[in-house]
Image 1 (cartoon, rainbow, N blue to C red):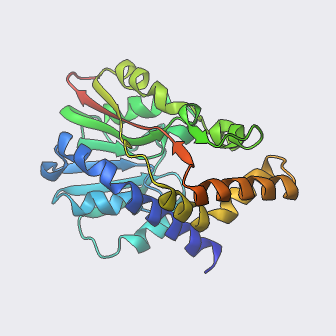
Image 2 (cartoon, rainbow, N blue to C red; image 1 turned 120 degrees about the horizontal axis):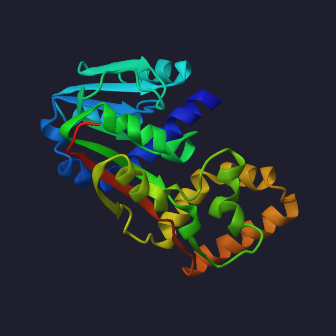
Image 3 (cartoon, helix red, strand yellow; image 1 turned 60 degrees about the vertical axis):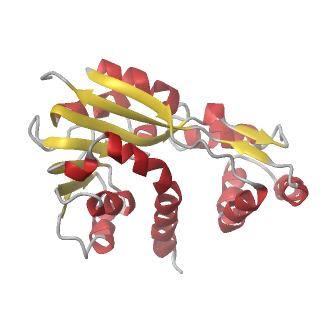
Length: 257
């Protein structure tokens, strides 16, 4: 499998794994009955495909990357209610009040100006429509056991910040939505604490990504091996514990912006 196919499969796997967290929220935003839906920062279309299958309405996906749109067209080839366009989330290329629902998933963490993105999402949403950020993590709230003083800070935000992201975007969702003029509900979508078998499955499927992240942040081969031995031992003993808060925000537009 080449890097491109691996990347697509990784995002598909992430979308499938997190789908149970989003589906109850789709009911809150009345997705099933939405006539027009906009997915901002749709990427490869993994979550957009899920959205399009849950509504008979017209679903539009935009992404600033021409390559992502090209991949999304392949992923979504069997759906006839989807339209894809190249577009910047900071300046959404649609008129105001155009959509019943405007969504994003794992976008605000990487946005240059997340406040501007939410303002734009609110602008293109109709009165009484919904703006929905389905998943935005907060690495500062991550809990890992056993603790590792060298590794934990990397996974708790340092790696994301090094790539230009905001590792603490989750705690800012309420502020972003309220300041955009939206009636706002914020919550944590992932309430389940996995067992060690689930942790191990995720770890084994993403082992090289973990190693590369640690290498990129200055750990030596021996330090990485030491952490892997420690983590595997905790999994084998059944004592490993992790919690990684992932937040959602639902905003209802109640006035013209």
